[in-house]
Image (cartoon, rainbow, N blue to C red; front, side, top):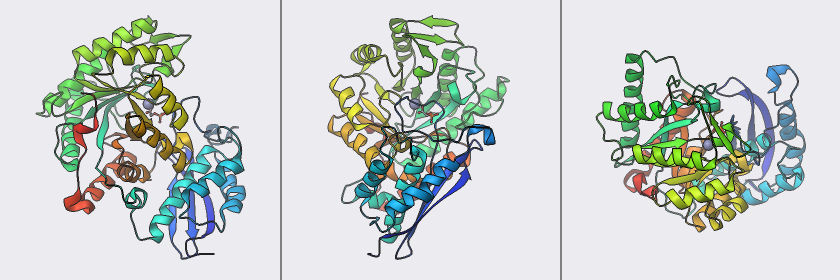
Length: 427
Ligand code: PGA
Ligand code: ZN
């Protein structure tokens, strides 16, 4: 037993930003240090993600997590008691081996990721360090370029519009604080414009305005107008970023854009997205093709990969082997890193390292179901990822992350460096 040995592992049910149950893990060390973390949850999930274990049945619409909490309090606690919290790799491996399924379906990826993050928090607390500094080790860090949602869509907005996230990236700002101030102006401008157009009807799951538009392209036009209305230059101060989440509206190699009344094959889809890139100041596109449409990805990256960041999310599900394969096959040039897709901190970090080794850009990302947990803000800085995505500029489960980044920027003082537009390798 050392001071940083795990003395107690506790799981409890809390509720997320959609009002659904989720897992919170609490780790207590011999020396009294405590770490806590809450599992997030996606709505538009890749098929290869770690399993988000739900009870099913009728309670909370089938979303209850008593089985996942039982994993934390039962087998995971039994495995980890006495282990050294400073050995994150060893602890994550114990959970991977104990679960012994390919997608963490026995313990539940939600149980495992909450414990994995809570262990890191406890270890950082034991060393009197913020999490970002603990995970950074000796590595120099930069504050990440944020991509921030202005309009929600897809599975996060009742499929009112096909594109899932319509975001801005404050590429022209000098500091993270200035970047977030720009986005605050753009978000407010978008609200004003929506109100003037009689289209202000609330917000979607991640806090972006509800997408009352006649077509997908109308939403892009409105996004550019919002940047201009905020007194900023589209493509110079702030660029556009889209998460198309195409797996959600694809089947058998076809893409059905319901709002536009179009049913496209992969070439048609590529043509449409290329047309958007020509017409709008788009710097980044996530999941433009379905996760199983490898040909679509490869051709699109060959056509547009030198001009725009092309991000694999559902395609890669934060898996190091898939990231390496995608790099070799030139399927994309950037990777979304969602710790709960992988299930452990160690595996998520390995996916990030695989991306960095292959010179792919990386974006640490939250999920559409979130909480007050700010771990990912720390990971984006500490891992020096370069970019971060946590939804919109409203609702406290989103603002908690942006505000934490402001605190980290302040703590860095003279050492604070904002990755800014430089984080986009292709521009
Ligand atoms: P999700 O959406 O959390 O619902 O999967 C986020 C994303 O697709 O990036
Ligand atoms: Zn996505």
